[in-house]
Length: 190
Image (cartoon, rainbow, N blue to C red; front, top):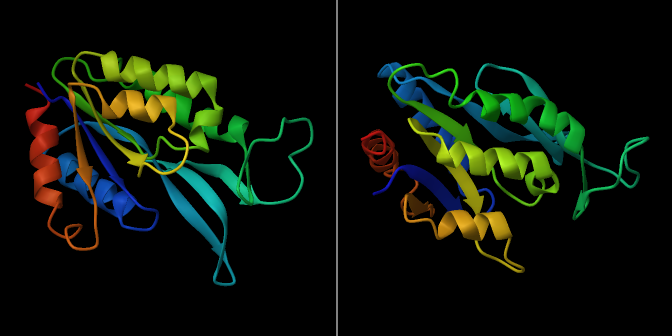
C-alpha cells in the first residue's frame, strides 16, 4: 500500500513549487503539515546558493558558492557550492525528529524537499529520513533528484520502497499534478 509521495524531475522543473502548493492545500484542509524545503538564493540575478526553509518560517544556509570551506568545518562540495552541513542539520533534524511525536492521535505530513546530494552529506539526516519513513501515522511528501550519474543510495532505497509513489514532474504535467499529489498524500493515511 502506498503511504509516502515523492516528486522527481530535473532541476528547476517545479518540484519545490508543487510541494509548497500541496502543503498549503493540505494545511487548509486541516492536516498537520511540517517539514522543510530548499530555496535558491540569488544575488544580482545570479544563483549564489540555497537556503533551507522550515514550514514554520525558520531559514538558514544550505550551501553557497565558494572556494573555501567554512572555518573549522570539513569541506562538502557539490559543483561550485560548499554545503553548510551544520546549519542544515540545525534546521532539518528537529523537524524530522518531531514528525511522529507531535501528531498526537491521527496522522500528519512531513515535507522533505529535498533528499539530494547536498543533504546526503549529513549522516544524521539519512538516519532521520529512514526513521521518519517508518513512523506510523506520518506521511512523507518529499522530492528526490532525477536519476543522473552515480546513484545515491538513500534515493534509490526510497524509489524502490513498496510504500512509495514517485511522480515525475515535467513541464507538460507540472501544472496539473497538484490534485493527484494531494489525493495520493491523503490516501497514504489509511
